[in-house]
Length: 266
Ligand code: IPD
Ligand code: CA
Ligand code: CA
Image (tube, rainbow, N blue to C red; front, top):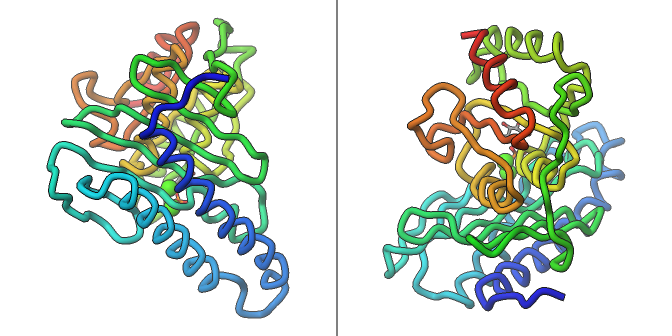
């Protein structure tokens, strides 16, 4: 088994604690599904509970670090060099509908650089982790490598659709059609952090989505890179997808092809 650093151990402990709470709540969702009101409020409480547990554990481990968390926003730390970036529940719509495809995502940024990433899918008990220059792993002991496939026709590619109110749906539909024309294996699973982890694990050759938030992609960006994959900003090669939220993650084999196909729809 690979040796785990103290920082990663803190992250694992926090994720496991939140996972126990989320798994308990996920069990309740099925019952609430059949009620007239549905599980909406219950799930947003579950989400907040998980975030609080993660906050407490990370704070206990590193009392001086700051936070950027989906539910509660920014918390400045006394040490401005370090910041946790946390999505306590990615794939909320899946969770809400009793679909077992959601995860916890935790990343650490040190002086503006991602140094540690963890994505945990507790239903499948799959934990994806990476440390900068230390490689990426699944279940802490098996090294992750992106896929070696080079042929778009035989690739599996995932994406996420924009919400009507916030996204450019026409642009998305042009991109979707263009990719579908050259690569029939398109998927839309509904948990962006897991999509990135799956690129790292060689399950899909690529993933793209626009207007994501830092907590959706921070851990995944590092995990993909450490698994030998490529990350790009969809429109501006100089921009940082952690900041713009427009991200392409891919193996080396189809990276330039899919980039070209997506660009052709601008
Ligand atoms: C969402 C998921 C989804 C993506 C959305 C995200 P949430 O995060 O990652 O796959 O398409 O853009 O907002 O709300 O489930 O944490
Ligand atoms: Ca999310
Ligand atoms: Ca979330």
